[in-house]
Length: 158
Image (cartoon, rainbow, N blue to C red):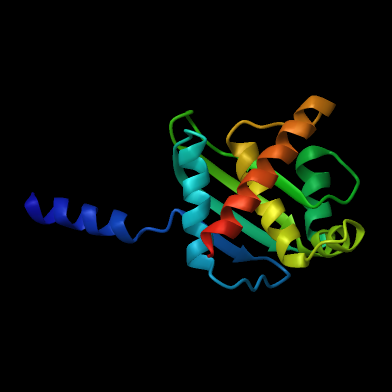
């Protein structure tokens, strides 16, 4: 019995809560470990339990297929967030991010690709924490939270 307990404790210690995966595009980001820790902090600050979160980086075409197949939307988007949680205590989510959209958005918004990537990463996490972006008031609140976490992340880098 004690050996099983030790194994479970060790396995949970080394189990990754946040995963970065590549579909048909490759995501290269410095300090992935620090970013994962920061995303965990975001969930703690939002008082939301986190069990597992997978980010999948892809192209416009890949994400368009998901948008059509799962949401019946026939348009490009930068992010789609799926909440797969069975209860409200432990969040399980999948977030699909189009690297093509991020690149275009960064150019349009006159910001760096790195900053826009972080914004979209935090945006997806905030959706899983309960924030919406359909109405004007919700969009403003979401942008304020994105800005807050971008600033906090940058200050954590030193």
